Image (cartoon, rainbow, N blue to C red; front, side, top):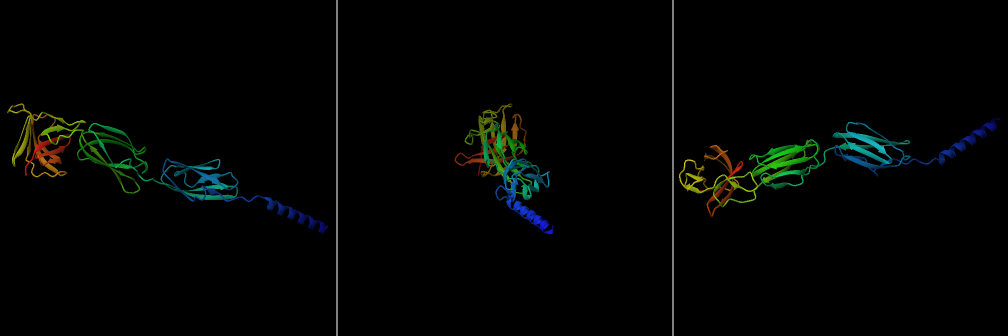
Length: 298
């Protein structure tokens, strides 16, 4: 009887061993080949191919505030929700594997470093890529040459040029990467540096506020422009102290006196020396919405 029981036990052991030997070996899980880490931006998606295990996968995320993860067939589908880092755990049969996922801002890229607009022109098609949905834009626009609208979540920049001048927009990310700058030049289509006058710079072409029928320069004293060749009470006039040895690109502070010129009052103005014609002894001075071309002295 004991012998029979021993034989039976031996047969059961042999059959059990054969079954284990016949069971297929479950391969290790592979994520996108050999991936151990993935970096993606907020509100972006990434699909990763899975293999190994028994072909059926499940997934869990350590911090679901940062990342959304789900399985679709043999693909792991990821979506960045908030900036941060978390761990994804993938299981299949008795196998499991982890994947580190970092949701971070991609590099900020501007479509161009500089652009030129006419006064009055609008641009609504500028798209800024990367940097996250919390990019801050700072403005350097002493001449108030532009008006802009910035939508950080979509990276949409809208511009409107008001008058001639230069402005700079500085794009800053929240992860302390180097800022990116966009230079905007607002320039009219015509050049008046050769013709004495007082001009409005708010249109595609520069326009005279009034015809400069008379102008004069008193050495070391002043220059003036008049709408009349004779002394009339209602004539329009502009007086400016003598400009001595002007240098292109320099900014000067000076008083301008306006007589019978609408929209302008006598006072101190900041002007940029835009052009100097040494052969004609003429200097072009640009201010907010205006431009003066007058004689200068040494």
